Amino acid sequence: MLSRAGISENALKVLYRLKDAGYEAYLVGGGVRDLLLGREPKDFDVATDAHPEQIKEVFRNCRLIGRRFRLAHVHFGREIIEVATFRAQHTEAEDGEMTEEGRIIRDNVYGTVEDDAVRRDFTVNALYYNIKDFSVVDYAGGVEDLEAGMLRLIGDPDVRYREDAVRMLRAVRFAAKLGFRIHPDAEAPIFELGHLLEDIAAARLFEEVLKLFMGGSAVQTYELLCHYDLLQYLFPQTAEALDNDQNGFFHALILRAMENTDIRIAAGKPVTPAFLYAVLMWMPMQRRAKELRREGMTEVQSICEAGGEVLVEQSRHVVFPKRFSLQTREIWQLQPRLKRTTGKGPLRLLEHPRFRASYDFLLLRAEAGEPHQELCDWWTEFQVENPDVIAQAASRAMPPKRARRRPRKKPPAGGPGESA
Ligand code: ATP
Ligand code: MG
Image (cartoon, rainbow, N blue to C red; front, side, top):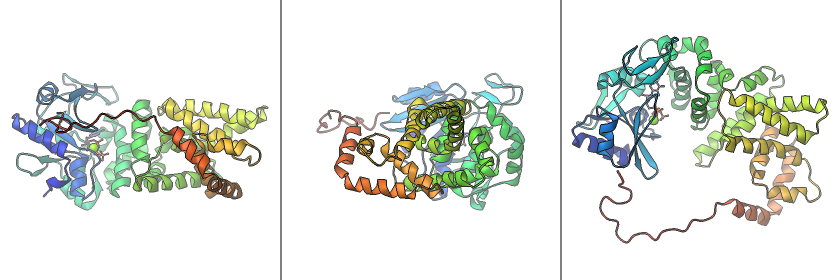
């Protein structure tokens, strides 16, 4: 039995509204899975027999999105409830499209809830909570697998991975996050089919990378990605550097960074992909910078140039938006400046918007075995001695306050917060 207490109010609202409009409405996917496991769901997905246009008629604050996958997003302030129409598995039906290799490129053939269940990825992700009678409907054996801690793909794993190679990354992600085992049948093909990730859009892979490393289980995720030889398809230069990592420094650096990321997320602190990339691309960047120095560049020039080069190359595989890559390069470029502890430089560095991240990065390098402990201690002490400089820099970094509207005395029924 699943308690409604764990379901967000807005998700319940969507479910009831659809039901009252005469449609079937289920909570599905990670929401049901996580509630049954006693975990807090990240988001709530709704499945219904209403078509996108019909969903739009039921909700005012609803946007239809997606091409490969037409979905309705119902907005409640910051929370978005994703509402999808039941889909059917298809081969060459009217609105579904596949490439010759069997990859799905359009997926808009509607079907029944049973159809919808079998085209989902894992059995534990195909559990449906019916708002009509509060029952959990299990068409694929998901409850049993949930109890056994087993990730089992629905259908033939080989076919399902060829349809969508991202399912391999999802297997790793859920295994790491839930502490589940990947069923042997779903595990074996990963070693052979990993290369299919090369055909996945680089922008979609960035979304997946964020979920992989910023979901709170980065350490296990990283270890599993290495174990299944998948890292090379996401971060080829990183994987190559790891192969040539004789003293184990780079591996240690990545592991420490992943540990820190998990700790920060558990504590509710922010994490940025810029830092993660600074770590993952550190060794490839260093190697290229060394070459450039041999050709006559200064240290600062070489880091600037090499940083640009390795990130451009990386972006061919996994898109890395500029707003992050600029920060990653700053973190790197500040590393040589951190070596100078005399003159006016250090005080000015404290005011740099990327000082803190660069200092954290230096600490990591020391923890991973680079001989910088004394330098780290110096900077730690220097910050303690200059709290006012840091406070000033922090206040400058804050976005300007926006004028707040005075709250209305009595919000009208169905007013703000109840926008759908
Ligand atoms: P979480 O939100 O906790 O990361 P989730 O299982 O909810 O996990 P979502 O990406 O939110 O994952 O997807 C919701 C549901 O949609 C999944 O549970 C699964 O049933 C289905 N799904 C998502 N991606 C795929 C895919 N690539 N192939 C098949 N089904 C998928
Ligand atoms: Mg989800």
